Length: 495
Ligand code: MCA
Ligand code: AMP
Image 1 (cartoon, rainbow, N blue to C red):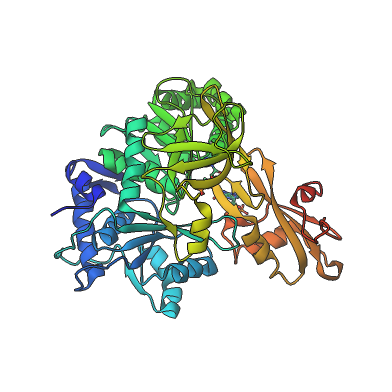
Image 2: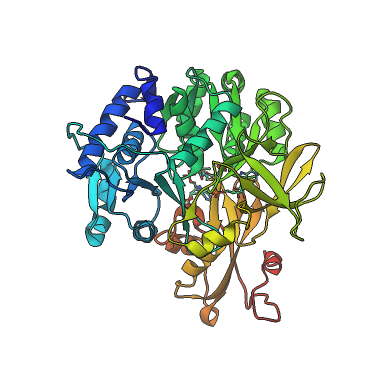
């Protein structure tokens, strides 16, 4: 029977260890068995879920993968949702995707149970089920596999739909470019509702037959203890994490620092991505550890597109060249394909890695593709001495904080619900730790007083913590143009 790519790959290394956690080890065979059993539970007698959407709410680890493979093997579409999201954010993802069930670990199941009851959704505790595996449907890679919610130029996140074939193409490209091996060992501490954690770390490691050590979050002391113990050959993180690691190394006592540096230096590859890695951070990391970080560029809609090389020059401030199987071009503001170096243009991407559609949003999907099928990323870049360098984004309403892509419009919509806020404008300001810091300029009703701590507290019941403003100015009026539209470049001057 033909099987989905990750399942077929897993059979090839069934006896190897897929996950190590403080609780013990899980083999690939155990993941296969547990996923078959979960698929049977999900099917509940049906032959095929026929692309029914199933939300997944669980921390990184063997339960997450058993659930992911289980819902895929039952013919479902995975909708991973953020562990730390608020109830309104969960409700949006569940209703927008039309999810019919939620798979969750025991602790998350308790938190989401009231919402599932209100929405009439089936809730399955991943740890509690134990059905014997039954017969599973035959599936082709053209089937839809995943909907990832991504914030952008609209106030509500859009669901990015990928098929099993897209996911396999995204993974195969990275396996080749970064020479993943069964002997690789990698820590996983990134959130499991975005590509970086799902594809670059988990998807690639399990495709290669490698071993993952999962952490529920970026638990720096625990991870550093394992780095000292030489636990890893690979490391993948966002720039904010490298900033935090530099601070930790600089603050460590000499013997401790030497042991950590030795652990990092022995890894075969360390990768940075999801946001711009400042050249100063790149260079400081090399000074401290001798490691040259490999920076790459990607996006939810396309997986990874550009990468510095495994062998050869890894240039600080640049994102390298197109990955295997991925076509990249630049289009100038005049609509011309840029052939020359040193001429900026929008990055456009084509290839088997590129998503199909925004879920239920045909107009947004059509707008994001050129007539000849190239995907418009909205990121500007230039090619210099053969390497692409990211220059910024076309939209001022997209903010990147700690690797998370945020919509200024979504945050503004939430702030306008605050009883004391009459008008507001949200922008991203440069920040040494977060890349950009969410910053809000507000006009209060009747000149009411508003402080940042109180505003942050109020926001946390409505928005995921990483969307909550980190800077606030209260002003009498917002800068506007002749049409009455807030001019965001002028808002910067208010801080
Ligand atoms: C945490 N805080 C943040 C962020 N994270 N504030 C702004 N932006 C953030 N990203 C706040 C918390 O709310 C808290 O505030 C305080 O910082 C400390 O929180 P803590 O949990 O201790 O922070 P942390 O665990 O050190 O988290 C930082 C982090 C995390 C590890 C960098 O943000 C993270 O995992 N980011 C990675 C996101 C990611 O994977 N993005 C990839 C998507 P308070 O003190 O008020 O409570 S992009 C993608 O997938 C594409 C395809 C790509 O190219 O990779
Ligand atoms: P997301 O949709 O959350 O996956 O975020 C994708 C966006 O992150 C891209 O469109 C870029 O703006 C940004 N991004 C990812 N990697 C890099 C990088 N290496 N340098 C600069 N920006 C990046």
